Image (cartoon, rainbow, N blue to C red; front, side):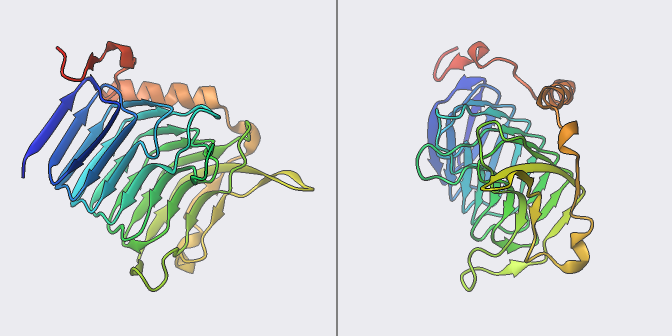
Length: 255
């Protein structure tokens, strides 16, 4: 299988099929991979991204890590910032995912383990103010979701729920054996007649014995976007996986 590599490029929207893909640094609006072997997307900046920032569809393995994605309300219509669809052994780690909002009909989530997503690992991501779901497990078998920080402070969004584990494809795909642990959540939604209320998690299809350790609620008053952002940037830079400005990247095909 051919390997395609992009380093510090401004990609815009790209789609690949039947390759191994490596994207390191630079910027992108959308990266879409179908029937790929291994997909690596690390240290990429996304601003007001497309339908997805990254979607892997029928891919065998991957690493999506240390990416910095910020969407401005009114400028983007995001289905899911990171979508794992009919894929397995994909690690989604240490990303900053902010502001998936619906201008059109799309759902606006941070990370979605969607139809047929099996044995994936989602950990240590920070998700802020996505209009529908922070992180969702909608399908699949044996996924692990751990140690993520998931927040909605309102800010013009009307989020649905911070974290969910619920079979959205009954009878179509296997579902179960998921592990969800150690996530920190403070998720506010606007409910008619009640104003802003908490809706941290919805876990109807997570094993009851696992629900207690699935997440810990954080006080809404303690959530500070600027402090969270500064802490993530410090970690990313220390790890050597962060390109601070997309304008420093070369254009696709340039030097």
